[in-house]
Image 1 (cartoon, helix red, strand yellow):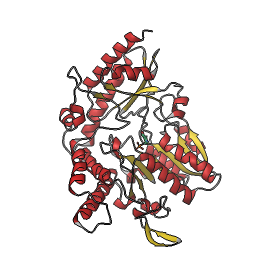
Image 2 (tube, protein in one colour):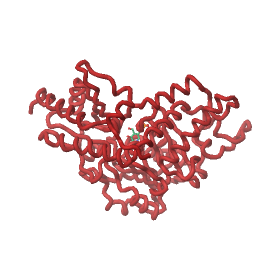
Image 3 (cartoon, helix red, strand yellow):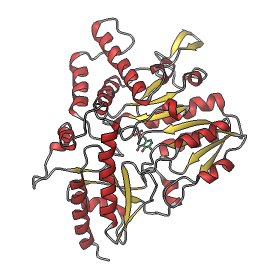
Image 4 (tube, helix red, strand yellow):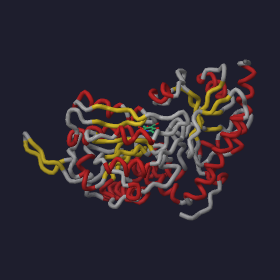
Length: 411
Ligand code: PLP
């Protein structure tokens, strides 16, 4: 921690960003909410594992097996440190945030849900944090209740107390919206949920690369994360759970590692975290995630956030200067994501035309159909999402490309 953030130096850490188009210009990558680019350190960690000590974890007594296990377990410690968990054993590795949400829905559901119980889902949620809970409706007879978003992209806090009832077993909410960039007031939400005896799951997939998180200060019960959205490899993710809660939960996948003893017709589950990590995990990707955390932690959050806030504020101001462009939502705190629509041009056309200028944007529903319906964007929206390596000059290139798009689709 402590190194001052230097965006140009950071860009050099990412080999993919050194590529140039035919005119010698760098690619403008603004699809970081979908996945971030990977720094050389992460690529080196993957290569190092596969070329020097590729072995399975927790079972090999030979040197490579021990090194692999040590490196894999080191990521657990680094993650615990990154999110302020009291104990590394509270971190369970998965292959991504989607798998983490599915795992949590299943294990919490098995242990805690009874027919007619209620689950509160915010309308900001990504499908990955909606559908697994919805699936619990058919499996366990629980009822999902939606928590509305206001026009500015904020959750309506005044609704919360009436949504929480004696039947509300769980509330789940995102840390950063992947469409609007909204950061809900989590501490207050968690406080109110806990006062009602309701468990809280936080989806931090879009937050971990952009702001500091401390699960103990937040006091959330569970939190999920995605490695590939925080400069780590695809195929890496995790969930955190308070130890006392995790210890009450049953396994959801059966196989090697997750058991203590097995007879021909029964098994006893292993202690946490092994209980939830059946079979061969994505070892290289988890080790690569450790390298990504090291990479992130060399910067101070203060300087990194100041840089990202400056770029996103500049993007909002620049795009708002075009009368045809309408930015989606105006939350009091916006992190890393800016979505917009343009009068007279379908979002897919916008993304496809700016791609001719080597600018990577995303268009569509962004796995948030309920939010799109609530905010009345039936054709979806265009999304620019930022990482630590993006610059105001790249925003200018986006603006220039949009000016050309306007000439193709005059009003
Ligand atoms: N949650 C949010 C808020 C997301 O934006 C995404 C992916 O875009 C996910 C969950 C799913 O993450 P993963 O790709 O790791 O499964």
